[in-house]
Length: 164
Image 1 (cartoon, rainbow, N blue to C red):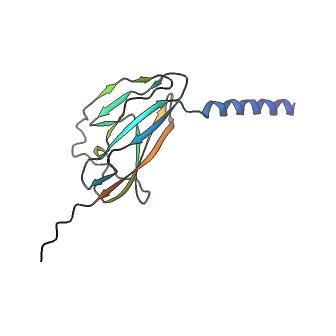
Image 2 (cartoon, one colour):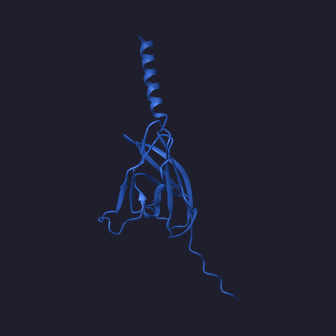
Image 3 (tube, rainbow, N blue to C red):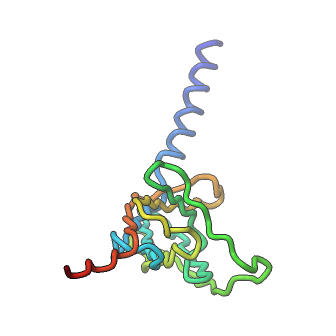
């Protein structure tokens, strides 16, 4: 009887492991500007690649120049979360649009992402890391995470030295 129960538990465990080992897509984040001046806009591009054998939803929820279907993890060089920008009038809604998107197996989405400096404060000089993640339906807590990009923010240019 113990052997039968042990085999049954082993079978259930192996089925559970095989169902969670493969994510249906990958996420790649990139930027064209690795160094920006303090106060300048910071933009990123996000691309999803379907590595499964079925269609994957890549719908874009573009609000105020940023795809909100992604979770953005922005850390300073000390590893601390960068504060979100507080909106002056939070009661006023954000403008945007939803664009349906489906990617077939083996295909890649068009770039989305956008202006991440809409949400996060990049005014302090230093290095910032950005990682993007997205939930896998039907479990939004099952996250697929992207690579990490590093942005360097430099202070305002020093005024030119006066001739002597």
